[in-house]
Length: 468
Image 1: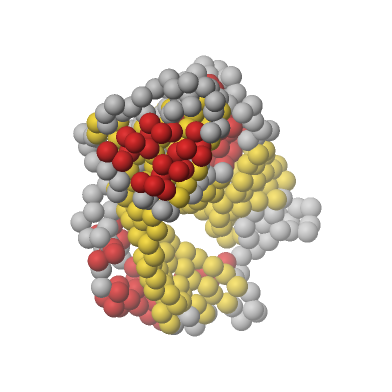
Image 2: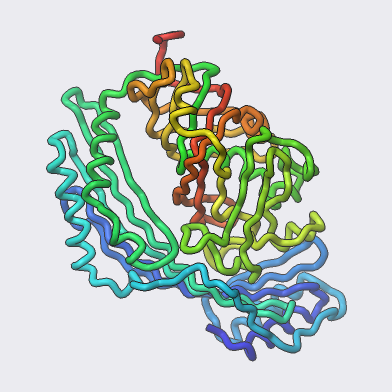
């Protein structure tokens, strides 16, 4: 990683034509993955990448560039090129750089995955693979994988500070494909991830987890057609938080709000959700998948209460868009790599636990659907219109979970759904995911307890008007 001496030279070269802020972002990343599929070792790979990005602000304008050549000559050339975007006198000179340290480190690695013996990892994964095929003759494939990205990040900026962070995101993936006698396919999966090393996943009972995934895959081969219409919907905990992430999280990012592309612009202090909804974006959770010690601008991550008892309290804010909003950063500036310009992004985003039990919520529904897990979705922040697809879905009749049905698509407007949440469970859970946006693919965590939504538009598979 570059020294403070080099960083001072580059920062001051960048600021010579009147930029008000300069930032150096450097990263070194090692990625390693082991994948078993179709009864063979599908892939074993290790990759290394490194580079530096430079960004300058003046007013509400920013310029950005990057290079994989980290020599002083290359960096000074990049600084000179970017500084040519401005044409006034120097307003800042950086004289020193002091490290900002965090009192509590959120990412501790006991067993670096990059050091793990590949043969031992393969033998461990084979236990799950074997269990899947032995579970049923309907299982036609089992995919088992461990992947890890170990990223070292260094940020220097013209506030005369620098920060260092280690982000070791490790993930376990188990998936099963089944096929019944009629040629119908089904799919089940289990995933686990967090900040840390191999110790985060190796304690998992992968044999039991892949058996559960196999049963879900088999059940899906005989799932019934799903209804359509305006229905009462129960969203499961954990990955059910995709709903909030898509419908409300993205429109609360400052990149949308500051550019007049969010339904929630200018609504701080207003009621935007049901009284029982509190929502949080928290990058400070120890060892969790979406956590950061420092964001990609060198700001400490925070626990950011977005909605409290239905009232909008804050946005998800990076430094640049915060300038436009005249609001401080919430430590939420993120990017996939040095090749991407950072912007406001979610970390661990969830609806907080409520008071209802799971049984109370299910028992309250006379006729509706229970969407236990989801595949993903998308939203248009400017009008808050979203759609996302269920993965594992069941009918509810007379307060009881009944047969599995084929996946449904839920559509609507986030600002409407927030007000239609009328029961919130006490079973908060989090689930890892990857989020793609303007600054690339980043690890995020979604979450919520079980929630009931009074009515939603559901797109099912039945061609009949009412098959129930």
